[in-house]
Image (cartoon, rainbow, N blue to C red; front, side, top):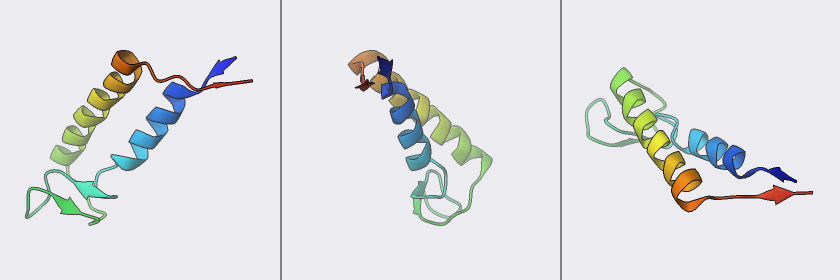
Length: 69
């Protein structure tokens, strides 16, 4: 059996936390901007920290597993 849990969680979080796609934290003129499709180095760093925090929670603390076959 193949465990697809880590792959699915990583892809979903990567898409949702891409800076500027849904939101950008911090934005250019505001703290949070939604759907501006722009990015900054600071927002990349913040989104990276959020990504690794959430993926650690989902994979290590909760232990999400999706088995196929």
